[in-house]
Amino acid sequence: MEFKILDLFCGAGGFSAGLHLADGFETAVGLDFDQSAVKTFAHNFPSATVVCGNILDEEVKRKIIELAREKGVNMIIGGPPCQGFSLKGKNRGLNDPRNFLFREYLSIVRELSPELFIIENVKNILNSTNHYFRDEILREIENLGYIVNYGVLNAKNYGVPQSRERAFFIASKQKFINFPNPSDIAVTVRDAISDLSYLESGEGEVISDYLNPPQSEYQSAMRGKCLQFHKASNHSPAAIAKLKMIPAEKGKEYLPKSLHGKQKFSTTWSRLEWDAVSPTVDTRFDTPSNGKNSHPYLNRAITPREAARLQSFNDDFHFCGSKIAVCRQIGNAVPPLLSKAIGDQIINELVSAVIKTESYELYHANAYTVIDELIKSGVKVNHVICDPPYNISRENNFNTLKCPRKGVDFGEWDKNADIFSWIPKYEKILDKNGSMIIFCSYRFISFIIKVMEESNLEVKDVIVWKKSNPMPRNIERRYVQDMEFAVWGVKKGAKWTFNKGDKPYLRSTFETSTVSGKERTAHPTQKSLQLMREIIEIHTNEGDVVIDPFAGSGTTGAACLNTGRKFIGIELNKEYFEIAAERLGAAERKKGI
Image (cartoon, rainbow, N blue to C red; front, top):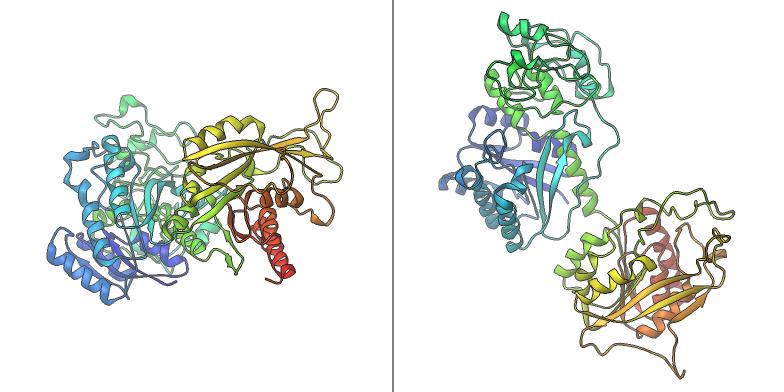
């Protein structure tokens, strides 16, 4: 899908700049009331139409809506002014009219009905006034019919050499959009600006050439045709004298408090650290007394171009206006590389693999979030049968001889897993006679029963899987671990399925071997196909739809297809998704479906 963007409160355009670095995004319209920022935006996005005006002006709003419709806008982004939520801005909450501009933003969403929109703000918007603004925004977004994700992202986790926490609300008509995974690689101040470290106070030109070769991959990526606004502030002799008193050593970057004067912040008169990320770049980074803005060893504040590098603007991004105006534009911007990470995530989510056939659907998705899409699209199933993470993995020194895994360390997916919160949402898609069977560790049986009974389900039994060939472990000091468990519940008031056949009674214990031979896949906790087939034949009928939110290697799905049931599977891990897809395809071909 190609996204045409309306950038509200666009400023210089950092948010749009980052999305343009991802595939599939083009900014069509921008709006801001700052004339210098509008000029900057127009210069860097020549194909976009940018309007200078106040969103509270009905004529301006009408013009923006008309332009957006004319240009086919299907995505809106923007950060309503955040000073009213800022801790430096005294966090005025309900007493600051700027804090209610999100309503104007959402009124334009209501008019244009885009596929997707994103609201960005300081993280305190989520907590301000006892969560009032967070809850109001979420309520209005959900009333508009969107699926929303919200939370805080730190730019330093996405290739930006700066610690900058921002709240995001990502709303989509069709899909829950997860936040991008953080990177393991940190970019430091040295990586960002060491090649620009040759100016003293008052030196430099507004536009100049590079003097030093790039010294990092980040610098190579950021470089443009020339440097603009790489000019150091002309500090007073007294300011320079203070700067000379600040050691350029880790842990000693601060001026002694006795020399702070009237400045109140703990980071007053301090230096950036070469081998760490920068603190948040604000609009007064050119003033040494404002915070931790001074160069790591030169006796000056950082220049606008150095600040732009710390914000992840490349050097070809041109800023318009006076130095004060440029500082304001840089300090208020969304870091482009943070925006790019969000854009890449959106595209990845929207093109995530879904396999649909007559007999099964298999989603490469997150079970905890894709359920919102299933509920919204009206999906109904007869049964939930699943084997979620047990949350029992731990490292130890036990090794199996024939299996490549170590003891009971099954992988990161089984550590700190959320094993309860998904149950109430999946109950919502069960039909009135539906059932739920959840495999689990003995440690969590009572917890799962409690959550099921709080979710309109009545627990009937605990099913036992007895393994005929259990893995021996610590046998001199413990019993052999030869059993696993599953909790069986049905909808309250259901006429549930229980196919006992011609047997006088059925025991709740199923005995099979663990998986081996050709049936074995790379999944470390794969269930026996025989076990799942027996359970499915008892608890479901032919033609029923079974969903497994944690499909793993696809055993539940294969058992369903082998017995004439339909199947919906969800699996987050790409390797296991591909294994499940292969097994389900083979099962479908074997049945001639």
